[in-house]
Every structure is written in C-alpha cells, then in structure tokens.
Image (cartoon, rainbow, N blue to C red; front, side, top):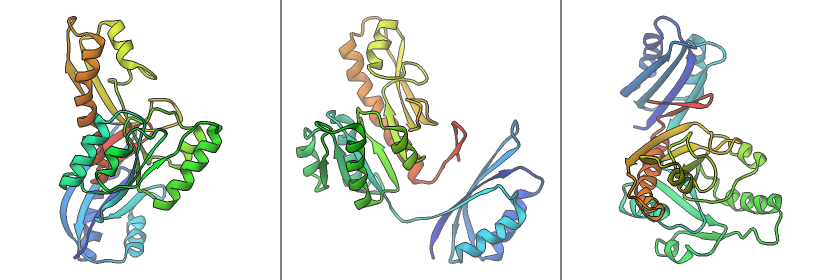
Length: 277
C-alpha cells in the first residue's frame, strides 16, 4: 500500500472536512494523519492529510474539485525520498551537519550533488561520495554563471535546492525559474539585519539575542516566506567572533528543521507567509 500526502488550500465553507473525508473514504483510503487550519481574516482553509492506499490520482483530484472552490490548490505528493541539491561557498559547518545527518539516515532525502562557486569544500564532500560541481563565477557574467548552474541542475532535476551558506545572490530570473523550490539559511533573526554581514550589524547594535532564519528565496533579498527560526541569548561580553561561533550552532539546527518540514510536506506558502501543518 502506498502512502501519500494531500495538501488542500481553498476558501473556507461549512462541512469541508466531512466532504473531503467522505471522498477519501470512497477511494478506500485510510487517513493516517490529518491537520487543518483556517485563516479567518482571509477565509482560507488549509488541510494536510496523510493517506495510505492505492488510487488514481487524477480521478481523486477531479472528485475533490467538485466539492471545492474552482480556485482551490490541490497537491498530492507520494512518499518517495525527495532529491535535493546543496549549494555552498566556503563555510563548512552547515553542510557538514547536513551531510552527517544524511549519511546517518536522520535526513531522509537523496542528496544528488553539491554545487559551489569555490573549490574549498570539495574534499569534505568527497568523503561522502557525493558529486561536487565547482562552478566558478570568475570571468563569467552573472547570466553566464547562472546558465551554467542551470545546466548542472538539469542533470539532477531536484525537488528542492538548499542554500547551505551559499554567499551569492541569484537573479530574479533564476529565482522565478525555481519558484518556492529554493531554501536559504540567513544568519540573523529576520526581518532584522537583512543582507550581508548580519553578525556585524547585530554586534554594532548591541543586541541581546542572535538567531537564524530559514526561508524560501524570493526576488526580494532575505524577505521570502519564513519556515523556521531560533535564537540564543547573548550579552555585552560577547565579541563579534564569539557571536559568530555561537551563531553557527543555531544556523545548523534551523536549516535542518526547516528542511525536515519541507520534505515532510508540511509547508504551505501563503503569499509571503507559511502555514505549517
């Protein structure tokens, strides 16, 4: 028997859960897990249902559309491992954590490749027998560099692109090509300290907490829908270097937790917010 996750976003109306469940029963599907949320301000209903059974996806979607608003979002995702590609630059702490989780089985994905604009982390990645692609931006325009990256990504067709401290900004065209498929870790508690060198910004401001934010990449720098955040408390005795060192642990945990939410199909993108079910 196959396991699938059904994601539904539609306008709220009376009896939706009953109507949807009745159709799933009609298809002889066993509901293993169900969660829902209503955005009362905008009258939008969100539902995540994990089902077990064999069925015709196109027919199920057709039947669901009969009871839902015509503009409804319906997505049925199978339980297969998802293919991801990691992007890195020079820092090893985030990708090192992900690779260890992956090789130990704690991260239930297929890491198909690592792409980097520097060659520094190749030795680390090689230890895990994962293809490493060094795509330098030297002597290339931004467009040429991104075209080369796209050619590489086409080899793997990843479900998700994970920026594990990739320190380059993608063009709007690139981001639009992979809409809602690029996950980034930013080393500040957004919306504070957007852009480059957020630890320096935080240090100069004398903050008492530092954090990290995992978010979906959009054309607006560090302003995409937030999936997961965490913080640690600091005080006036922390130097800038000590802040950076402590922040690394938060970055690792935040990105890992956000990635788990995405591969478990628990994230709805709702305008510039997320609904986690």
